[in-house]
Length: 530
Image (tube, rainbow, N blue to C red; front, side, top):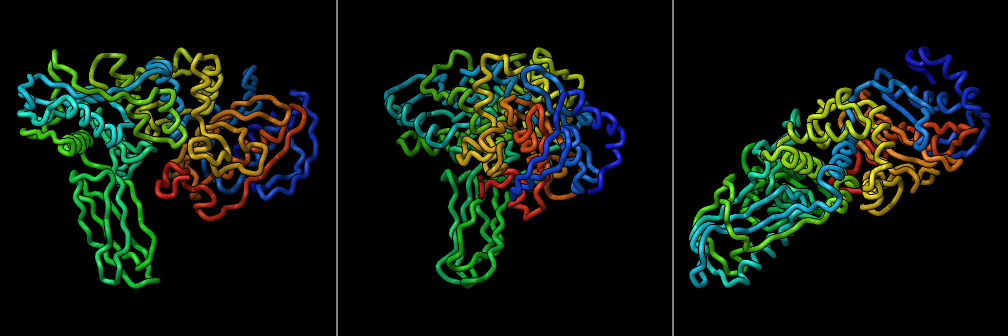
């Protein structure tokens, strides 16, 4: 296997490291399909061999492995090299949220009025006020509407006002890709929104396209939640059984027209896509207005958005989100970008009292990081999720965070939110659910994944063969293959197979198809969410 030139700078250290650590390097034979090998090498040599894989030729890597308890560095390669961490950024955001907002924090969505009741008529405006809850479902708005109807209100003489002023009106983050605009992982951020499912993909609708009964028929399209806020421009057609399935679903820029194109064969499978909406505040208002109508409450006036609820307005109904400690499960397990951004803006609001925005939120995260031993002056964070390609973090900063949070009173909640290798449950294994199966890292490694084009990361905890807990951070950038996740897995399995005296090299598995090899982590493959 060819080795990159960068190894020359470290070679002397690699030869003497086993002696310094008192290691006795042993030979192991596993014959595992995951690529276990019987190479004699110390841990640094083993990891360098993995990073020397041709898939990383011309790429960049920042990698650190340390003893979780003592902090002793067991391996490092360009430890302070700042690279794009992708969704590993969420570790910074989630830890700061637990500290600054608190594990018990709940978002509220309230209905208020500045008017008076006259029998069944509410004389005045009805305000729907959000505080940034990224988990509000259509059924939650329905319950709010039911509570209004239960008070005997049958008509509102004024307007329905959607108050999203807890956050600013900037909907998308710095350098988010324009071609991702209708993709569910890049939904617009608002203090008021709707999630169509219990993965809580806020700011989206689910569009399902099923074949018609016969060739030439229009396909059948359904939208969840049922709403007129989006329009379907159906250009697709049903073709004869056995024909190709070329259905594509995409929202047009600047509006809520969702175009469905392509062919679906008779008897073919249903295509299911999560599509973002334009202006989620009005989406929430539309869902709530429909729910009011379903419960016999008519709002006479139009819908208005972006207007603050007057001081002194009376609360008529309220919905609270789950606690933050529980919200972290769908957020971190499924790597939900919108949860990260809502929390970032919420932290900004709490820190300053101003409408939550990315600048204040990132500053609040940075203030927390200083207390955790992470130097915000040595990293760049511009959003909460890592979707921006401006985010730059080195592996040594993640290691500091991973060790520091172990002393926090909320650590158990944070650790519980990390994906677990090969745990088959969606809310257990999350984005690691199909990785490192059949190895000692399975159900052992707890770590956050990250994926962007040309950027991949994995950082977290694993227990080695001797029972020692290790922290690791692997940030890989600028590679050309579709995936280098096999290299990340090989490093973590190598750690799990090794102990203080014996290092076991596990070679990366060979490149396979994109789906098998994890070219996209589960959070980027919504229809086939793992």
